[in-house]
Amino acid sequence: MNCEACQLKELEVEHFEISEVLRCILHTIVFLRALGLVQPKDVDLELFEITYVQCGVVEVEKKIDEKIEHFISWVEKHPNKKSQICLSFYEVKSKQPSWFTNKTERLYWEQWYVNLNVTQRPKPYSESASEERSSRRAMLEASLGEVLSQIIKFVNEKKDHVPPISEGVIYFPYEITIPSSPDSAFGMDMIKRMLQTGHPTMLS
Image (cartoon, rainbow, N blue to C red):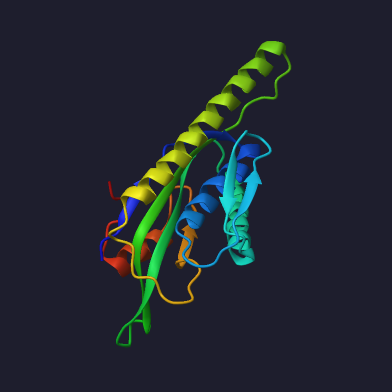
C-alpha cells in the first residue's frame, strides 16, 4: 500500500502554547479526513487570532486531548528539545492467523509529522522584553497559519492513496504517536510500525 507522508513546518512554541497549537493542527487534519455525517464545530484559539474546525465527535476530542497531555508530560521531563508527533491513518485488514501474528493488521496509508521546538523563555520584566514576546507570538501565529495552509494543500492534492470509504464510517481509523524516550522521537512504537507495514516511516 502506498503510504503518503507530510512533514509540517517546524513551530517554535513555549510550554503554555503547546496545547492550543496541537489541538488546532491535529483537529484540522482529522476533520479534513472526515467522511461521514460530522457536526463541524468552530473553535477560536485564545492565544491567537485563528479559528479551526473540529469534527464535533466526543471520542476524537478525548483521544486528542489525552495524547496532548501525554506529550506535555514528556516535554516536562525533556525540556528544550525538538520533538515530533505523528498522526497516522490506517486500514484494518484481516490476515491468516499464525503463531506469531494477530488476526488483523494495520496498513498505514497516510502519516502527518508535527514538528515542535519547545523553548523556555524568562517572563518579561521590562517593556523591551514584553515587546519581544509579542513579536514572537505574532511570528508563531503567522507560522501556524502557514501550517494550516500546508495541511489543506496536501489534502487537496493527495487523494489517490485514500482507501475506499466504508458505509457508516465517520472518519478513518487513526493513531497519534508521541515521543517515548529521550533518544528517539518515537521509540519502540515506531520501530514496531516499520516492521508491521514494511514501509519507511520517514517519507519525503
